[in-house]
View 1 (tube, rainbow, N blue to C red):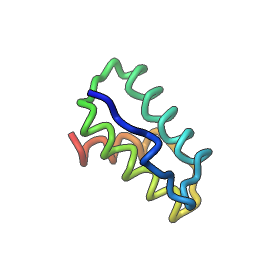
View 2 (view 1 turned 90 degrees about the vertical axis):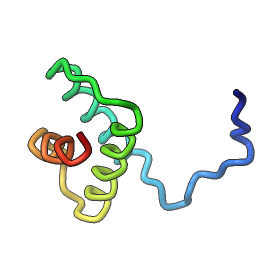
View 3 (view 1 turned 90 degrees about the horizontal axis):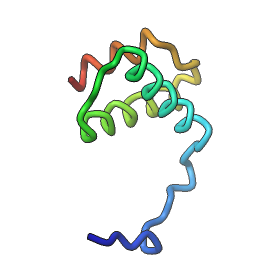
Length: 73
């Protein structure tokens, strides 16, 4: 299956730094906890956390990752 990425556009409001921190935080937590999450659930988790931290401006923390992980598990 081939995905034509040239047809996709990145939203102008996407904050790459925040998204990167969220992904690193989620992956780091899952690695430490030796926990695996299905890709669709991990995608939802990252999306929810990204939205939260964009809206609040808070720093990512392990407690929040665990709370949100329970929501999508």
